[in-house]
Length: 363
Image (cartoon, rainbow, N blue to C red; front, side, top):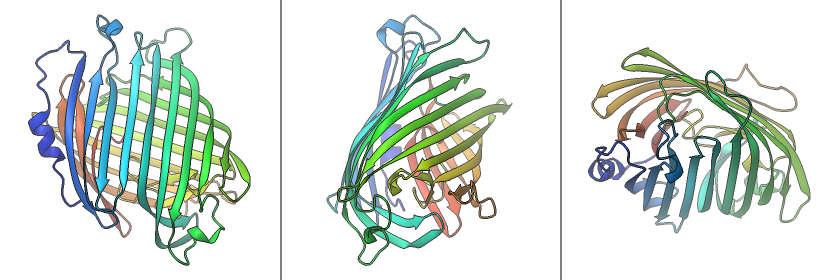
């Protein structure tokens, strides 16, 4: 659990004023300090930029782009370097998002599917690149924009240590001793939101098809898998100061994927309250809702909850074994023009809880 952080104070002191309505670039620096049992003391910094490209400066409807540079180092000599981004370009004709990063870290493994185990701590080093590039297609729609494009992923997942006598290191879990993952696929993206970072109305839908991506084990065969993913969110203004956000997520896998590439529940975005990867299997489905309230000036509050299920080749989704979580949180507006928020959430699941401090909404 996160015990200490300076990020909120850093955001309050260093967030630039919003006095320039036509500003194309806003920089938000955030110091990071936290403690967890697997890392001990960790410290670092992040720099988030919201921007509009020069050629779009005269286009009033240009979507804001966002890019974050982050780095952290821990007492256990763990290192995190990451650059997530989403970019709109040429009057919203092009849209790209993804992440580039390098991680030397420890994670917990809880088993796969119905084969759950007491948590096993393992170490891993991996570079990761995820790139999604889209172009607007089709005739102009009355509401929203439709994009089509390509997806690519690469990950060199080098497992450096596993728990003695544990399941992960036994050789029976695909990718348990490491894997090289690479491949790509196709995507469709529909967007009718009124705002990118904090919508009050509209729909956003992200559909993915990954075609026979390759996973190569260091001492084993190469396996292939395909995946179908739908991630859909809708936003509804209930009151001038209240918004209801709904999210529907489904991920289905065909073939043999390494454990680190299976469908997951848990983490900062999908079923907060559980450790990321606490639940993983071939298939996953999730429904979650969040009530967002304006409180005072830059401050807001939220209440949220969700329920999900896992599945495999025997059952598409095991609806008789749901996973549920709920919680609440606070919001602090870092950039008033685009309403980019600092998100502080606390969530509870079954014999589990989580504290989350991030930039941007869960969905």
